[in-house]
Length: 386
Ligand SMILES: Cc1ncc(COP(=O)(O)O)c(C=O)c1O
Image 1: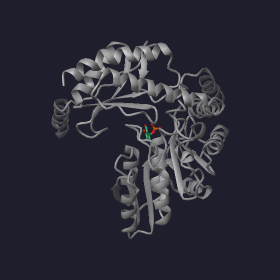
Image 2: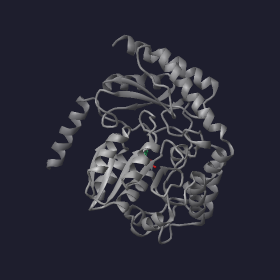
Image 3: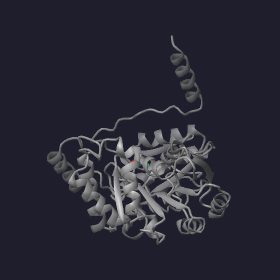
Image 4: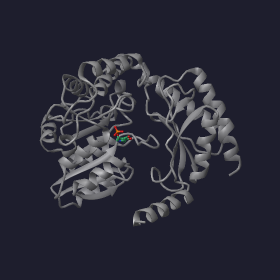
């Protein structure tokens, strides 16, 4: 017996005791559930036009991209996708990565490194946290919701280069970062602002063009935008959007770009088609917001006493406290045909385990009626028993 067996058993027991054991639940392709757990905010993952574009790309280019982007992994589709993403977000240039996670790793590590400072929001997504650690820059954690706190950290620094990293839309509760104010602080202190808009693209800003466009900062020279292609675009992959010089720098130096196989052509083709649909059908963005408001109203009515904030993006958080009631609520929803996200530590702070319900543009009136019924059935008793 190696140390590994004993250690795995011990850490697994600790997770079980804390209610933090996790189980994979593979979906069936024809599951008859209303899905409020996915990130397919605009309902494009299974849109026939998106699927057809992915299949066309698969047939034309093959199953994989066959190499890293700098060798054989860049197809014409990747270039077209980059052009379209840059145009949609008002950015000068774009560089597609194999995921949003690697896009964040690439942007942060290549732009900072030893001798630089990364100011990371307290609620920054794990990929930004990991990127900051990997960068070997000095890292300060600050509350970006309070730009004055960021200003203090920037003012006190000795490093000439500083990068402030924040999610445009908080991935857990949908809070919107005060980007205009943060940008003003960054500009004053000669820092660059990096905004991860994974949950803002297709959701916030004119026509879903994102939180930076909403803040009037699209294309600003001292701003870097990262996002995923896997949420409102329903595909897979990630992208860094910035000035051409930044993108050139990333091509030459970003290890998660250089040493990673290029995004699969099917994903690039699907994302490109999805982007075209977002541009042509902005009513999807409005439908998403209306549905989020409806889900929040149902949760509020089902669980009086629980504070369910007015949604600002796709997610509707229903905070239940300990992991156990959150797990029980998600299981209860599943029994009644509603798939609900369940967030526990370390995804959220201790004591704030929750259901995270995500609205989609393609929910039908029948879907919303089922959501209302199930939330009443499941949340009512849980809240009454508190
Ligand atoms: C805020 C944020 N950034 C980055 C990512 C990573 O994107 P991807 O899943 O494409 O790696 C996610 C989600 O998964 C996210 O929520």
